[in-house]
Structures are given as structure tokens and as C-alpha cells.
Amino acid sequence: MMMRLPNLLGSKNGRLSAFFFLYMTEGIPLGFAATAVATQLRRMGVGPAEIGAFVAAFYLPWAFKWAFGPLVDVFRSERFGHRRAWILGTQIMMAATLAVLIFLKLPEQLALFTAILLLHNTFAAMQDVAIDSLACNVLHEDERGLANGLMFAGAAVGQAVGGSGVLFLMAYIGFQSSFIFVALCILAVTGLVVLPMKEALIQATAKTGSGLRHAAGEMRDFAMAAFRAFLGTKGAYAGVFFALLPAGAMSLSLALQSNLSVELGLNDDQVAWLQLFSTISAAVSMVIGGVLSDHLGRRRVLSVSIVLMSLPVLYLMMVLQQHGYVMPRTPGGGGASVAPELVTALWVATIAFNIFMGLMYGVRSALFMDVTNPRVAATQFTAYMALMNLAIAYTATWQGLAIEAWGYPVTLAVDAVFGLTCLLLLPLMKKARSEGEQVGDTHAAQRASRSAFGLGLLCLSWLPFWAFRADTGAAQPIFNTFFTLVFVVAALFMLAGRGVLGAEAGALLRRATLWLAPLLLALYLRRFLDGPADSGPTLLLSLSEGLIYAVPLLAGLVLLRLARYSWDGLSAQTAR
Image 1 (cartoon, helix red, strand yellow):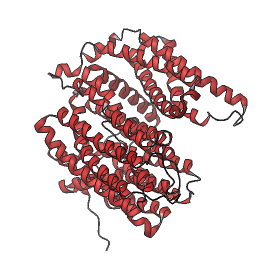
Image 2 (tube, rainbow, N blue to C red):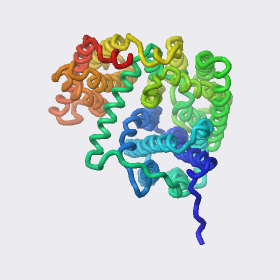
Image 3 (cartoon, rainbow, N blue to C red):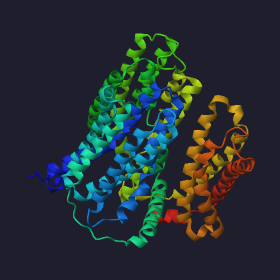
Image 4 (cartoon, helix red, strand yellow):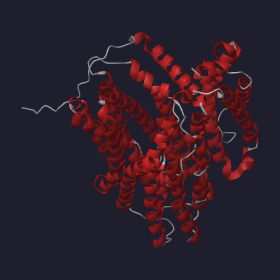
């Protein structure tokens, strides 16, 4: 007789174990992409810029996971359970998208490979929303602290399995077969943890026919609530920019470290050991950082940690510069020997960096909780986390481009300095003195106007850049990445601001923002159109070029017009 697997949601230890393993399935694909796949792509001769874009694409769905929340809330299954059905479905799709990759040939089909992994991680982000929703509903109050610690530990273990574990096995099963291994790891959790789950039935609040409209309404409400919360207090407003900036140097936690490991001659086992020790160091430091922040204060520990994160990066920069290792080199090409000191420096810098990054990691999340409006805590905190993932995505992109344009030492130096800019905002991120003050102050309208004005000027500054982009030389891709971030933020601002202003904005302006926001997001496609004049039909290229000028121009003018409104309703709402 076949043994029946237990329902882990039925006991405390079972629930803690379940969420550990569920979060492990979130960490596995991240470690697989950022370490194992990035390492193999570099061995195949794929450049740092393409690998940076690949890693960035993996983080993009996590920047917009807030949009999946209403879908998870609205659409339910009586047969499979509300959140369980979503977890089950997304894990199956995660495994299926990985299995498809075995038929692709790299590096020739890298674009399709990246697109499929982007879809894979979209399902992973959906799964994260469903897991968090399940945790909120089944974990008892006295279990939540330990459960959250185990969940982050599970994600770290998952990254080690997907990164180090796959690299260790690759010598025996090959690169293509590693996709099946990762898929099987996810399906093992599906079969042993998710399938035996028994989730309590919850009455559905919306019929399937009206589900999409209901979900769209919830997404609109989310955007408006986050908009009001972000602008409600000085600390919350500073938190937006703090989340959009890298919290310290990031180069040794992204593809740059994997690229350099391959170029310096580390084999797959050595890269795996480096990633494993790094992960363990970071995990231990996260716990230590949390303890220190409780005794010494969050902002103090965070400031010291961020400064310390730049030191290993600057150390590696100096060693590379001293040995004349500037531009990326073809792995194994040219017969040039690599100085052992460079490999030692990479190990020392990477381990030290992960220790300091671990100290920062948990403290940063706690600081965001301090400046969050308690009335919309889930909405605002989720939005902060989404912005942090957006920062990871654009950082991975610009660093990959910068390595090819400027070389490793300059990229590391810029990363070390740019990572410190967030420290300028820390004095503003103070916890409100009272709950009433934390809900909102009287300056929200002024912040909205200033934000609209600033975004409008940035959109208009695109016009001279695009006209004279050839004169920016090697820095052109970096500017392109910056303006992509501007367009994303401007689009979200217009959509949320449209809802907050309501009828005050007028029918024409409301209609303009509704059309311009998706067009701003679509400008990301310009990367496929900025090519030789004979690369496509002249009419299509001329139309595309016209839109590339017209959309930012109109968006800039609309945002400047929005800056002239009083936004009185915003202040009244946040002050309640």
C-alpha cells in the first residue's frame, strides 16, 4: 500500500517546513540563472552586456509582482484550493518552461532563451504572491517570525542548489540536462509538499465573468493607495528614491562576478564553491545584522554596512588595475596566463562583499517598515520591494554594458561610488513620532507637483539625447538604460496620478495619460529599431522614429501640466 503524504499545513512544524521548501523553489531559478547559466554563457563567448541584460530580464517580473496580487485574490478554485491552485499551476509552468530550454541551441538562440526564462520567472513571481498570501492566512501569529526567517533561509538554500549544485553536477550531466535537473527539483516540492496540502475553502468574491474587471479595479486601487502612501510623509517619499537606488555596491552579487570568474580560469567546481561560500556567509550575516540593528539602531548599522560593501569592490578594482586586467577577455583565448593574485583577490573580495551585504540585507527591509503607513502596510511595503527589484534589473543592465565600454576597473569604481548615493537619503527616513504623523502630513500635494515637474523635465531631456546620441559614444547604452527607468516611473506616476486626481484632471488629460503610459513602456522596444537605415521598411522606420520623439515629448508636456494642479484631494486623503 502506498504511503499517504501528510498535509503539512495541519501542524506547526509542518507549516514551517512547507514554507521553507516553497521559498526554496523561488531561490532555485534565481541561483540557476545568475550563477550557473551566466557562467556557461560566458564560457560560450557571450559578452558581459548580453549576460547583464539576461540577468536583468530575470528580475523584471519581480518588479511588477504587485500586479499579480489582484489576480491571485480574485480567481479561485474550489477543487484545488485558492492559493494551492495557484502554487500548483505556477510550479508546473515553471518546470515546463525549463524543460523547453533543452531544445534550444546556445548562444545562437540566446534571445529566445532569455524570453522563455523571462516567462519562467513571471510564473515564479506569481508563485511568490500566492505563497505569501497562503502564509498570511495559515500561519499562526506566534509562528510568523520564525517562519519568515525560514522562508529567507529556504530561498538562500534554493539559490545554492540552483547555482552551486548545478555547477557541481554539470561535469556529470552536461549543461542542457541541468535544465531538467532544476525542473525536477521544483516538481519534487510540487509532489511532496504542494499536492498533499489541504487548504480551507474560502467563499469566492467574484464570478469568473467579472473577474478580470474586478482584478483590474484592484490593481488600480493598489496603484492609487501606493501613490498616496509614497507621498504621505517625508520618510515614505525618501523611501521611493532609496528603493530605486542600489543599497550599496552590487557588482559582486550580479553577473560581473560570474563573468570575471570564468575569464580568470575558474572551472565549474571552483565557481560553485565560491558561490556556496558566498551564500553561507551572506545568510549568517543577515542574522547578525538583524541583531545588531536592534541594539545599535537600523540607520547606523545600515550606513556602516553600505560603506563596507564598497571596500571589497574598490579592492578588486585596484588589484585588476595593477595587473593590467581592464577589458573583458575571451575565456581561454589568447594563451595569456592569469596571475594567481587575481584569483585570490576575487575570492577575498567576493566573500567579504557577501558578509557586508548580508549585514545590510535584513536591516534595509526593517527600515522600509518604519516609514510605511500602517493603514496601507501591505500595499506600500510590496511596492517598495518591487522598486528594489527594478533597481537590481537596471543595475545588471548598465553594468554589463559598462564592462564592455569602460572595462572592469572603471565599472567597479562607478559601482562602489554610485552605491553610496543612497546614504544621502538615510537622514530623511525616520520613523514618524506618532501614528497620526505616520499616516500623512500636509505636504503630500507639494511632493506630487514636484515629482510631476521633475519627471516631465526628464522626459523632455530625452529629445536632445536621442537627437545627438551618437556623440555620447560608449556611454550611449548607459543613458538608454537611465531613460528606460525614467519612462517606467513616469508611466506609473501618470496612471496612479490620473486615478487620484479624478475629474479634476479633465477628460482630455485623463485620456492622454491613459494612452501615453503604455506607449512610454513600449519605448523599450526602441532597442530593436535603432539600427542601420536599410534594416527594415523605410516607412516603418520613419514612423517608429517619429514615435520615439513624439511620445516622450507629449508625456513631458502632460507631466508638466499635472505639476500645475493643486492635488488637494491627495492631501485630504492622506491626512485622514
